[in-house]
Image 1 (cartoon, rainbow over the protein chains, first blue to last red):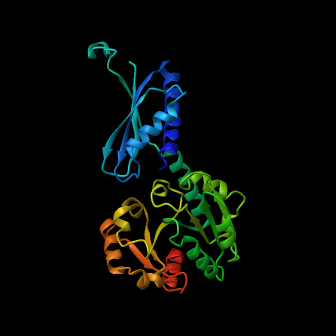
Image 2: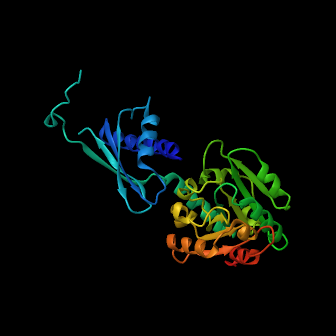
Image 3: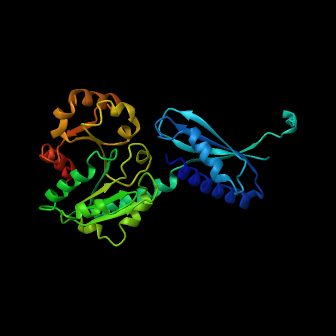
Length: 85
Length: 227
């Protein structure tokens, strides 16, 4: 139900990581974002992916994919970014 | 016309940038700060979550009225709109503030922080946080509370804990409300207790009626037992 606000948190967090990475090694093009979504996190990975797609529109992350690994716990973790080499 | 996708070999494999952090990190950090503030100020903070209409506000009304005789108790209440709950609770004489979340389905640590602005926490013994009526979303957001109570009323069906396991897994105490209506609603209390235990073995369960006062003493002990 609150997947859209989570998607916006996610975008903020990714932008933060991009900024840090850019400062260290120059440009960065994100292809995909990897998450771990626990069964007890109360979050639907599909709804989050849809909200992410909508929230990305018009930002530098438009067109990037969200892939979620389903886990058993309550975690909701940003595992990492797949970027151009 | 379909554009053929480039052969796999032409796409260089991606480089992985490790992030490894909780998506709720910002909220978790704020909640931790709040918890430290509450502990330092010596205020016991209990949050209440339930479906809309389970009786959070009615229970808070009687608890605040009773606690006010011996302790400094206050409440922050969250709703999408209106200050109806704050007006109701203020009748107890306790300090009460309303948080309007707009369209958001839950309270976040940031809203609690903002809601507390200007309050002297050191002067309080007990602070209640009444979440937005919702049995799904509040489960993910730590508010810095010492204890989270999940309320469910006898009219909601004995299988509710099985249908909404997440909130029962993140709460510390289950409070069964509207006990005075149990017979009229045909609620099988033993089955309800069994279902709570199935989802969360060993969870503390307290049965109350805000109307008759049944179970209220036990609940108040639960609020004050840290002292």
